Image (spheres, rainbow, N blue to C red):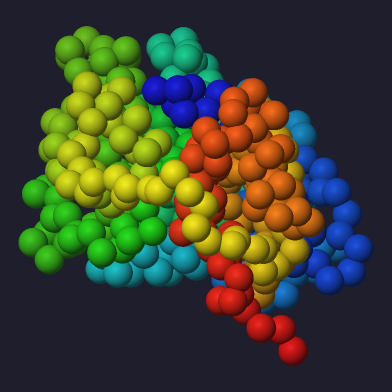
Length: 416
């Protein structure tokens, strides 16, 4: 189902393209091409996210790569593991973030702390269990685990004496980072990597594909029946939980936990994953108006049903009645799938859009051609009569207008 939305390699390239273009539009000097060590780093992605939210300025020369946190020799197979003593300082804000979440659950223990090289045997022992857990996960469910691990760029091992009730976490503002309490068994590691890898996978899908609609915030919240009565989840959190439970249910079946042939730890979610994914999934099926087309595809693949939607498609005239113009210069990047183009608007803060290749070509042409000239070009491109091209182009331009990438002449922003 993931591959039906985006092949793993294409999704990774699209995520990197988004962060690279964001760095280019945010950096006011001469932004460099970021190498993989930097562009995949949770710290880099956090800094870029902060700048896009208007919380800070971005200076590309200060971005911190994964190698500043993890020695190359301290890895669990292909997973980089935070091992340098500096990791506790560099990830202090992320650790405080997780600690605040524990405090909110009335389990105050102070900020968690990482085990690193300076902890000697305690760190080496945790690393050995982590490696065993990756090997177990791959032996049990290789296709699933390889798909999910590609989206975890750094693992931090939490000192169990500073973990409180924490088992694992994916701090949302540090994409790619997974924190695990020092594990006691390989099955505990395998489950945590599936759980948090599912979240990381969905994070990458959410920033590159169509999971939510523009008004998804208006969706009523969901109350998980296994949580306290006051607990309410917004749509995005519910979708993330459903996706994680669906992946855990698949892994639990493959590992024999569901059938009872393999034991899990007392805190394990594997025995309840299938039931919880069904509960969450059935609720999501009724929220189709707030879910994007790729979320519909995901639910259809996992549950065999598409979400219901009440909105009828807007009718469009065959004529292009409006004189569309581009109000801002746009940046275009073609990566991953040949039919998907990343468009950046250098506003403050920058805005980003994923559009089809036809839509990107129309935008590029409208920067210096009239709508009539663009219609003639597309008639040749599509090898159809101009009248039919105009009809088809009308819908494409209408969609671009709705997104805000196009304006109607006379309503475009006035520049001083």
